[in-house]
Image (cartoon, rainbow over all chains, first blue to last red; front, side, top):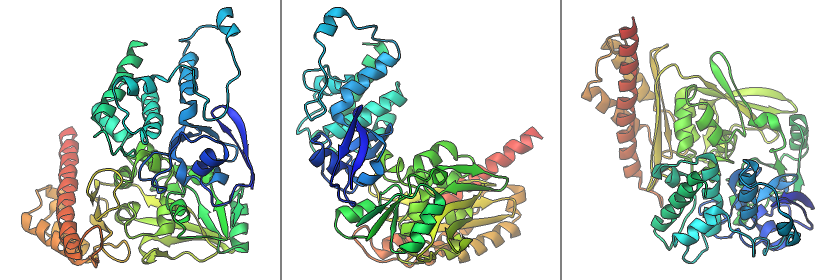
Length: 191
Length: 296
């Protein structure tokens, strides 16, 4: 079957999709967006977390056909998504002519985010050393970013709760907690 | 495999009548796991997400009509007052990602003895609204679970909503597992006090082939509370009453040994949960009594 939906702000079409296929498989294998990771395939690990109409979900548990007509944000589009969100609140101002001269159409593939500014949560993960093997990172970034959007002033308990569906087998989570606190602090400073 | 996308409830019923083997999928948190692991290859997958009515709820005079696909997150956020037991149970479901998708309709459809919603539904009192092209009916929750992962649905029927009694007193839910998140219950227990009828109701999860009520324990406690005048005098429940209640709840279990725990552990733990939830709910009842007396 064919599935039409929006991924990271762009209309996408996937063909020859098997009816039992997951959204995760379509993203990774048909659209070339391998950022969302495939690990447990049963919703236990959160590595495949994406936003479905704004809501964080495990993309391995969404049937491809259920994504028809819906709006998906993956980790590849997170920087853009975060930027638009902060611009929506009037934090950005207009584009200068100099900036416009460097403007380029954005790609839709796995390189989408390359060369552009990172989302604040991504930068915070780097700065806090919250990335080791990196496999759980995309899911954690999407989940943490959504929490900070909803709850700009999270307690440690809030952070743990929001990330309770994301498993990391390397870090012991402490650096991840640091990263989310850092992103929250920077967000509240308006940096 | 065919993917059916009914745009309305009527279309869904027609599709289910035409293809009784069609597997309905809403949150996908059970169905997709089975498909991903090749445990199930249904001929038809029927997406219910397009039927908006299923994601809505309505609080009436005595009951809440909860659409089958209302995700657990919405129950936690919006129905804590009306359905405190179910809201607590919803909070223990897996993780935020899963709670954003899964709902009570799926829990009922799967009818796993370990489903987190069941003890809360049994304790509160509920009816499952099911429908086929032949007509609609309401199945009392006590008659809904018929075996391990079996329910009272006919092949052409779909679950549309659950009608749950609004809380008229304190309710609690407790669950045993190795951590707070992502846990399939080793065992679970729901308790609801119903001061209006001066009764208590229970629900036991993951400790019998189906979710069950501990009816002997309920009858014992109803009688003990009545005899001691507890509903009126608001005294602390005597330890011997609590112990007897707990023992009867344990006795209502019919568990098995499995990877999550042994039968004897489950029986023991259900007793502990019963005693604790009784204490929590009764203390809360006493508190609201005192508060209302103070106001008067």
